[in-house]
Image 1: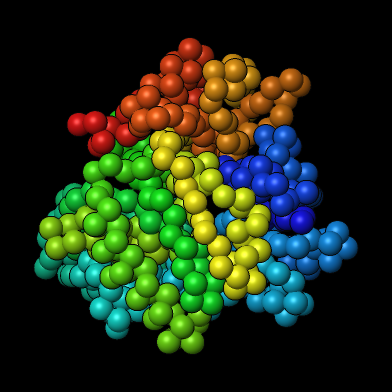
Image 2: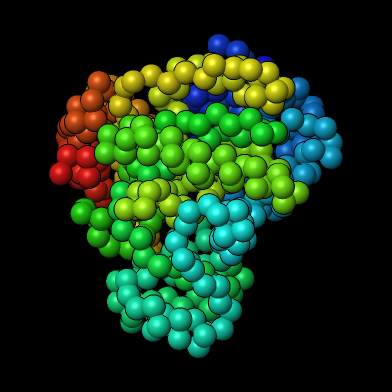
Length: 419
């Protein structure tokens, strides 16, 4: 079978690599892809928002399955566009993608179907939002209602921070229309984890869980980012908690979407937090998380292509996962996430591969016989090992042996497991 992956980041690199390693898959294409993916896939010069061009490519090249990586084309209706042309595509329709594209939609769905989440309010008026913040106190969480590339959340530890966030989002339209409405939530304390599932027509295949590190600096300090590293498994989250999350969050959400007339196909990403009252939903995404994908997919022991086609054809499949641990560290350009300098030369990445590490490219550009930075999060480097501690040591031994001028990375990914 031939597969097309839509997107250009580290997540899409991981998806393409998993398909490339599948015995059932003969050809992998990525549109538009990036310069670091060419060992795993053929990059196609088509933007993720060029629906007509992508559909034409699928038709003329005999593509069996299109897999959508990023959220924006999903929110813009690429699945609907392909469905109208009877082209097999994996992802939610535009209506179903609202579970990520609108925080207020997701919160209202959870309230209606008693899916555990934080108490909240939804606001379009700055003064009303400020009054709610003063009434509830800090810490408190302010979220842009719409898509904001993973950066539309402020965990405010003080009232001033929360009020500033509201003024930025609603008053100054920091994220455009995406922040004309904000959701303000109670602050939940506990261990966070990412629980992703493959979903199609009521079938649910849960994945192994991961934990992401959103803050820019060691000790979970600094601004929220798109993610600075991740690891899987998450030993501090028990199997009983995972089962509870499946039964109280994942299954009811899939059923609720069907009842609401927006049945969900795609990756249902549940960002969860383990509170004293059990797991609660922080957010839903309608696609793979990044960087969680890069540490979860390598643990899949089944043929990814064969599984995906069985899923889309409603055929039973035993999806298997290995017991190895994977830990990944993001290398980001100096200044990320507020502003980045592009063009700095990366060290020789072949040294990392020689050390048994995997490199996923997110924001790189090929220069002569190497790569330079071409984005905020540039690459993610992973190690697989019999334990998280060994995987962590392997990654940092490799990274610490190179010069990263113009770049930075956290040196404590996985610290919550070892504290």
